Image 1 (cartoon, rainbow, N blue to C red):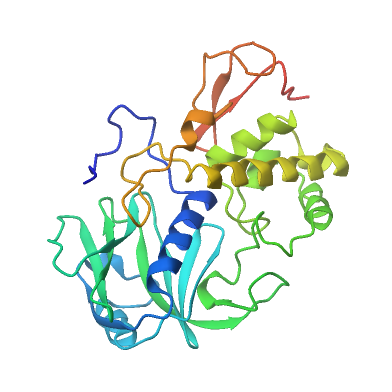
Image 2: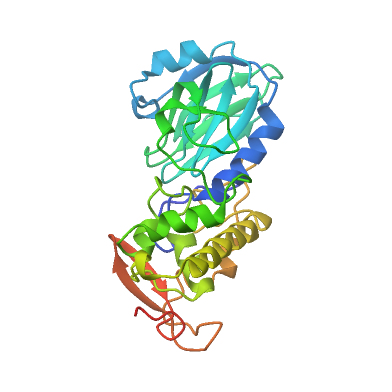
Length: 299
C-alpha cells in the first residue's frame, strides 16, 4: 500500500507534475488501458469535469468508448477515443491509478471508469485542480509528433521530448522574446512541459541565469540550454519523474525519485555541485528560482 500525504509535510511547496511525471503516467496507462473498452464511467465531483464538459456529459461520452492510444503533450495527456479524446490534466495533486475490480473507494476519488477486463481506472485528486474533459480531436496546427490533438490544447506548443522538434528553430523563437529567459521557458505557447523545477535545472546545467533577457543570448547558447532541458528530462524519466509530494504517484502507486539528483531546485544554502558556492533562492513569478550566483551570472 502507499500513503497519501497532505502538501507541506516534510516537503517543499507542492509542485504541479511536469513533463517527466506526466510521461511516466502516460506510459503506465498505455500498458493498462490501450485497446480496452470503457464501461460505467462515474464523475463523482463537479470540479472533475471542466471546459464546458459536465460530469454527465463525460459519463455519456466515455461509456462504451475504446481506448485507441494514450498520448501526451507537455503536461497534458489524453486517451484517444476515435474522433474524441479524454483529456486529463493532473493539476497539483491528481493521480491516475489502476485498481482491481474489488478495490474500495478513496475519500479523494473524483472520477473512475471500469475497463472490460474488470479493472478500474481512478482519478484521485485531493486539491481538485485537475480534471477530465472529453473534447474533439483536430488536426495539429503546427508540425509535431501528433497529427491530431485535443482542440482545447491546440495553443500548447510541442515539448522538448517531441522527436520532431527542431532545436535550432525553437532557439530562434526563444531569442525573439525580449523578456526574462525563465519567463520564456515557462510559456507553454513557446515550448510546453517545462515547469519551475526543470527550468531551474536546465538553466543551472547550461550556466545561464533565468533573469537574463532571452533576446540578448546567443542562439548557440540557447540551443545548448534546450539540449540541457532534454537531458534533464530524460534523466528524470529514467528515475521515474520528480516527486516532492507523496500526492504524486504513478499508475501503480509508486513515487518518482528524481528529487535526490537535483542540482539547483530546492538546494538553497547547499554548495553548488560545480563550483562549491551556495545555491541562492529568489522569488520569480510568484515562485522560487534557484541558481548559483557564481556559475549563473545575471549579466
